[in-house]
Length: 336
Image 1 (cartoon, rainbow, N blue to C red):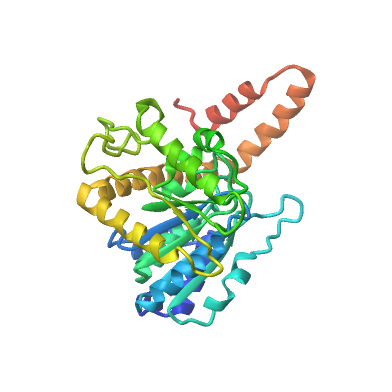
Image 2: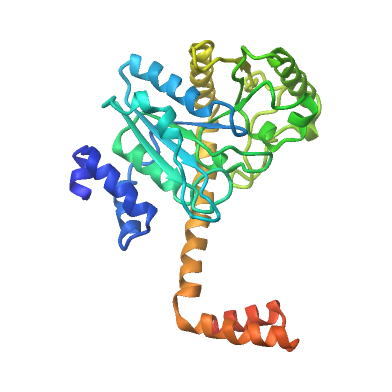
């Protein structure tokens, strides 16, 4: 599989993604072998509330990239039903006209209960597509609210898509989405109310620029502590644009593509790209370590036996969740 992956076989990429998604034996070694060159692709995340037209916007962007003869990888995440465990993966339907294009590789993923707007292994899949050689990666999250901000750990440029029905400027100000956006898009701008949302967003951004405690990513002394961006009084800082689009007709999409490219230039010239990649790598190491520890914790019979006995004690009032947890940890880490 590794040999065919390096040979550029699309079927090998698809099989590798399935192996990663299902965490089959050897998947970590496979990732280690293919991720030896570091991130190279431009990673563009598209997020926002449900019904904002994210899939249509990504399809329009992909068409523009293909017009420039660039190959594009797309990761589209759909929610998993908490009852049946299934997912419709409807994003693939909306991108159906891209499915026959050999220059586009689309992978639909189900969240499988993961929070944050992405699937549990979305970041690994994005890394695989990067290693495979796609220069542009478009990542669509599930419909998210104010706090599902996992896309910040996966993309270099975050495009937040809103629609005329998204609410007023005050709602935008308190939303976590305001804090992660590199570019704002008011999609379906041909609907009534688009101008109001557009103006409210611009006013909210102007207000935030004048209030340091509202700004995202204030400069940090520790590079790996928190996302960092230059202060607004720095002449080289990034001014978040607010754009209007109608994805179905393509109106405003070229301007969005220009904004994405300008943000990439800003990241390169300011050094922010390396900072974001470093932060992302730190988060990934923590995630991989925690996931491995969870596997070790519940793989053996000891933890399950202590848990089962502890549940009886909790019901009898002889123990608490904290004492049972301490017993499990003491059995696994006797020296601690």
